[in-house]
Image 1 (cartoon, rainbow, N blue to C red):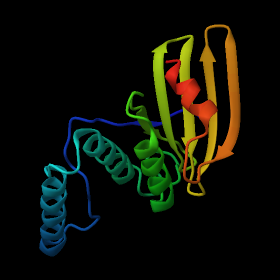
Image 2 (image 1 turned 90 degrees about the horizontal axis):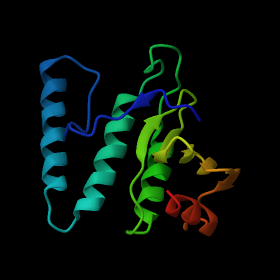
Image 3 (image 1 turned 30 degrees about the vertical axis):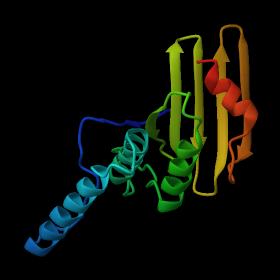
Length: 161
């Protein structure tokens, strides 16, 4: 679950087109404008805005094959969908993870306290979660599928960070 592309959360840039024509650039500007208006709405809430911004930015960065400078698979809409749904389901008392794209097209989420207190989840376009964690002298790892709710063990592991 090594991360290859780490997010820069300081930008508000959410969507990108691959075109360079005047029409493509106009569409790109319209997408950004609509996205920014959505993110500015009161009803969305700050935590939801942060989640949406992080996942969409990461997806746009890693949306084409070779995004990592090698032959990294793109993050698909399915992966984006499951990562976003997972993060929206995190209880409010838990911190949001750092996000990164994996070369296999999955999205990794990482919670870090110190080198020997870390928990990481990788989610793919089928909703499959692979997770591992180190909590001082205890190591955990496993796999499951995210459907509607986050497994209570995973909530507990994240809560330890």
